[in-house]
Image 1 (tube, rainbow, N blue to C red):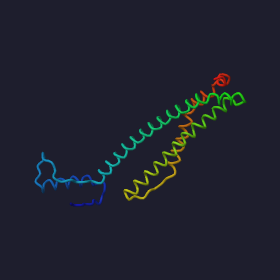
Image 2: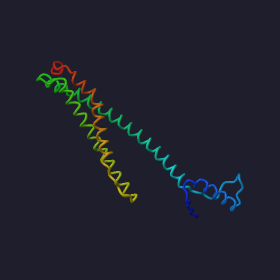
Image 3: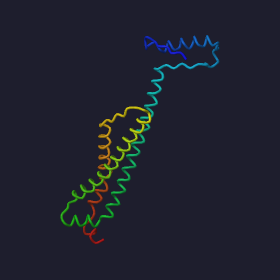
Image 4: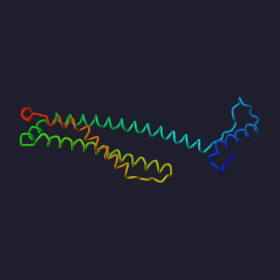
Length: 181
């Protein structure tokens, strides 16, 4: 094993080429043959790590958007079932003076609470996973509040976005028909 350090980092590629040529000459390797040695250039390695990190970032972003979409569909389904099962409650509330806006607020709040609960569980799983990986890899675990706050805000936004239709549907329930059923 040989470790060489270049004084000028801008010339590392040229230095790598010269070392490769010298080793090929000393090992008597002719041009069509493959090298019997490996040269690692930190700049090339760093570029590969950066590309791999970028690819991983794109994959994880796609998975997170897919998870948000699935979570949103679950919220719509749960809240739509809640609307159909609570028609009498909606009818009673409307008959005693609750307006459509009150019904929308109630169901939107419930959707946000469901989404927020999912977001909190996700954050707890993420923090726990980070601590396990940090402990296994003997790395310091750094907990930043910005990603956690972003996750909670995205969960609230998901609840609002996917809770709008069921809340609107609940506000359109006819109180007379709901009380008769």
